[in-house]
Amino acid sequence: MKNRLLALMLSCLVLPNVAMAVQEAQCPTLQAEHLKAQYQVTNGKGQQWQMTLIRNGQDFIIQRDGSTFEEWSSNGEYVRYFPAEKRSVTYRKGDLRALNIQHDRDQLYHVVSPALPTHMTKTQSKQEACFATQGFEGKVNGLESELVWIDAIGLPAEFILGQSQPNLAYKLVGVEPFNSDAFVVLTQDYQDIDFADVGDSESDPFIAKMINQGFIEHGGSGFYNSEGQSIEAQGGHGSHSH
Image (tube, rainbow, N blue to C red; front, side):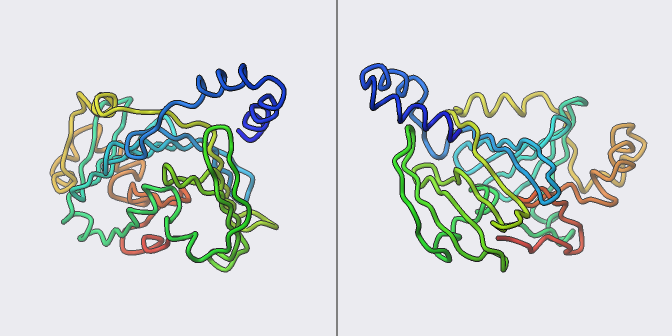
């Protein structure tokens, strides 16, 4: 993304009219509450994966692989979707409390905690081709870290946890408008089951498979923090946040 933005910025110096037309074509009008943002995530072992965040008002979807995605609703419910099977499992607020599942909704909605900048020192502000960004640096979880924040959409352009030896890095690779109708289509025609009914449905092949693989009841809770780490039932990493 940085290379593309740099190229656009340099072209503005040479061919301003052409550059402006290209910029307008590649910089759609975005609303912070209706967008799709794609990130490249790298952990401390050098492993990489793609993460997609889709916002629809205060509801949002997070997808980290092709086999499943999760929706967090403004009413406090959490739904885990399995596209291949067209099945889903809904966790009510009471289920989350019973499982002692804790999450930082603001952190999930903004990829990193929106409070991070208040605990960091401002560095360089830039007017990129599509966004104004503000840089920050400082300690996060005891590690010297770097954040490049896009205030207009409430998302990081880049976040590096641990500058000298990164433990985790997010890099925005694409963002585009995403309307409510498209959001609804993503979750249409799924056969849903309440988590509270899972124990009575183990004869269902899908439920049996998901339990066996640790998606629903055993092992991983089916919840992940913004680092992509499984949030275990009974606490575990559930209270961890940046």
